[in-house]
Image: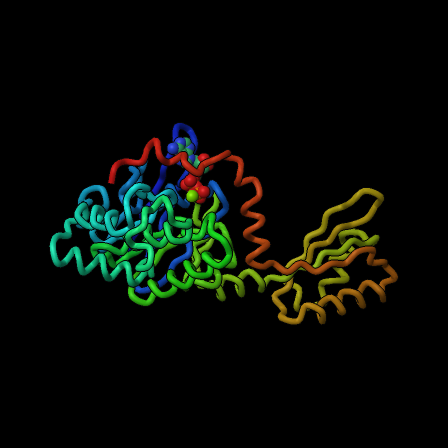
Amino acid sequence: MISVEHLTKCYGDFVAVDDLSFEIDEGHVYGFLGPNGAGKSTTMNIMTGCLSATSGRVLIDGHDIFEEPKLAKKLIGYLPEQPPLYMSESPVEYLQFVGEAKGLRGEELRQQIAQVIEQTRIGDVQHKRISALSKGYRQRVGIAQALLGKPRVIILDEPTVGLDPIQIIEIRDLIRELGRSHTVIFSSHILSEVQTICDEILMIAHGKLVAFDEPGKLEKRLLSPNEINLVTDAGAEQAQKLLSPIEEISSVSTSPMDGGYLRVEIRTDSGDIYSVSRKIFNAFKSSGKVLLEMSLKKANLEDLFIELSEGADDGGSNADSNESEAKEK
Ligand code: ADP
Ligand code: MG
């Protein structure tokens, strides 16, 4: 449905999106997960034709977003990070305006407006001024305008940011619901949110795709190589020799520490890590060497995500930094 090919975006010398490639299939909910400054908004702005790319291309159902923007954009509904809502208007007036801009007229326009108002449940505020609405309702109005024109793909940039907990739950439910009839791509910097809503996670950091898989599989893959770290008074050679009979061990690396101690990092693919650590303990015990420290390290999605987030937030404020280059829709 969507094909992103070697997408790169530079701001001067700074590479915000770095040779990004991925495919989006129809009918799934995709979560674009990454810390602030990862390049999520930049990528989404390019995918929706609101921002030009430095190189690479985006095809929406075979149509290049820059070469055939009309055909490509018809297939996408977009809620940007800062939706351009007109505060003095009511949701109905705003939807009328957006619908006309999307080429809808007359009865068709009227019907679609009624439909998206119902879908996003903004009926009770449809005639109030947008400036008087809560952030949660404004976000729904933003989603409603994305739905006009019946696009097959809905792209939502951080739709739950700035909402209170109840509103967050409501918007998440709405995203799930939209996922039944649309391909949905939404971005978030909250791991648990992406884990619970989407069928596929695209993890992005420093403008690069670092993982792309189903939430469960991603976690399983990351959990499998378990690590045992220890500190001993054995020498490197002796430690290797003590550990070599233990079949479940897949790799051992050692590094000397101050005071003549040795740090050993052991990896195992065994599902029963305690059985492996028992064998290691017994091997050292029978040799008369001492284990001064022994710890288990289990990788999980949260760890990986935190690791990726570290150092990624150095770009300063980027909440409105896309505006200068964003083109008119
Ligand atoms: P995310 O949405 O994942 O938080 P963005 O795509 O907004 O990330 O930003 C990615 C990086 O590009 C950030 O480091 C940000 O500071 C930088 N950036 C975004 N827009 C601009 C711009 N118009 N000019 C310069 N740098 C920008
Ligand atoms: Mg963003």
